[in-house]
Length: 375
Image 1 (cartoon, rainbow, N blue to C red):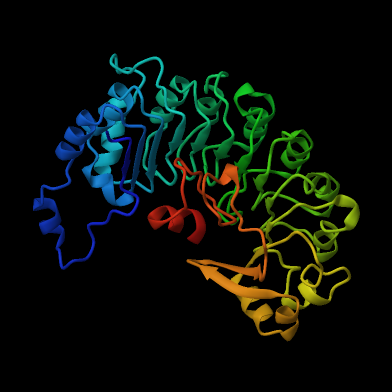
Image 2 (cartoon, rainbow, N blue to C red):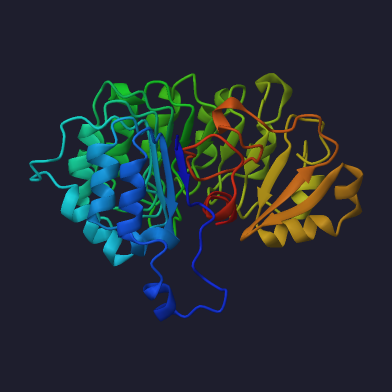
């Protein structure tokens, strides 16, 4: 009885194959995928990714969204091939009479599915009343599509990172007023401010005081945050375990204040990449500097330059920190930590700083690790 189809580690690259050879091989095609799905009527999870995109035709989308009534999770991380885009457009659109009013998926990841048309989100999101996990990172989702999510959904994990069609004020309204996001645990609003800044200073002032008490992971990288917002950040650190403040305009005095005893910080992971005030010396030798302190912090994400600079200082080793990296990202990690990092809200992962919403329980690996932990 098949309950999970996992293609997260699948690749057609290598083994001496040419593109023509891959096209001629018939082991994994839209046809065979469809046949497999038709035989797996008890399927609960379908985990795909970019390498599978060229093999996902309309018949595969129909099986997943129209026919498999027990399906709980679908992940299409990174898929953007033209056939994938066309298959979605053919099946998931408001004028398809076969599209059911209710699709019972609980966990959906379209992380970096950059080519999907806005009409896909307009048609799909209002039909998902049971959503708990939703990753729309770097997609063409719109404000109106978000607001059309059924109020019966109970979304605990949400990523709206790098969605250029979203408006900051409207996103804040959605987060503060929509009943589906009242119990958020993970919220990713990561943006590269050199390309698009979602949250203005006013948006930040409106959002931070009203964030749900359930929240444990918050990514605000790229938001317009300055020292004037520190009073809104400090009350959050006693309940958050992950906080990303990259590419903001905080000072070292602001950052060091996060770990002042009166705020009882529970942070295990902090991202300070792209903050001009952060240097190896300021992390060690400023007043109340972070690295020498005995705090809850286990992982500090920094630019590669700052991690390399810290690694050259004997003070870093004396304080119990070591240099680590994964993909394009660099960290300082505290050594000899008893906490293994596993949390129920991470769904089996032990790593900190994952920017991809998981759709299945288990350690993050393969292409999912690259997108969530390496980019």
